[in-house]
Image 1 (tube, rainbow, N blue to C red):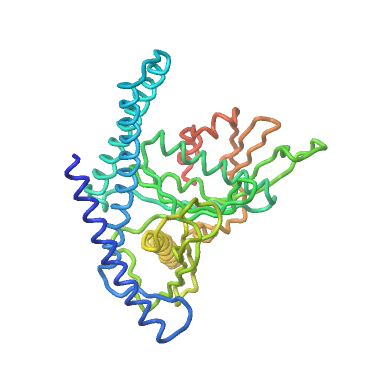
Image 2: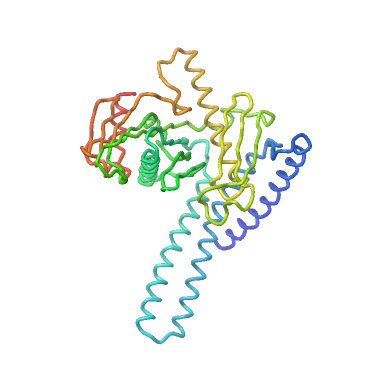
Length: 363
């Protein structure tokens, strides 16, 4: 396995240089036309290269974690050879045992990432979920974060892979909006989560004990399979800018964030959650493809006089689909007029019953 990991490192470095050269060339060409930092996709295979780079980035991140743990294990083992204090030796042994367990988990994660990349992606269900805080200010943002964590836990239970494409947090730890991709068999059932989610509860900052009502919108977009949607490079304007907000040592060092504008429709998407400009561009393209595919589907449905209401792709469904009433410990789905107790258990990712009930009614 170690030899294979070294090959991944070599391929990653080579591909990084290649993509950087393409980006610099494209930027130089565009700068002759405009002074702003605008770049364009210049080759059909650029998307394939970016996807491969994104995969390699995931592997390299895990390799770096693994090597850091291996270094810690070695340091603790060296201490055991020289330390005579029995209690200290016991602590070092416990630490080594813990680190080895973490190393094993990382090795399994590396294997999972590689297996997923090698599998036929066209046969894997995939959706993109967008969560946006609505009415209710900071309370809405905090609930948006709770909904994201609920879906995250639900994905873990289902053994679905989740990848954050874009995220904007608030100063108090809430989420203004977040977009993420989910891959896994049956994940398309999450389309039943599309709509406005209403929460009724007493915020922690409420001194008078009054119940506040806030809303969060959830949009679930089907991710198009290869060749289902075609985007012409000349129809795109891709701007780079400096990432902002939480993000550790990589934020604000360089212009790694990416904003893509689809000129014919005016749709604009952005990503700054990844470390590199290349990975952020791939994330933003995934979002754009899903949005354009949604518009295409809706246009086809209109031609067939489809009865579906609203434009889920823009998260603008006016009707609320679900209410989370904390004082009464009750969740109500207004589409099927059914309620459940134990909100906190459901927020732990136990969504199966709710989704299945809505699914039965073919909403």
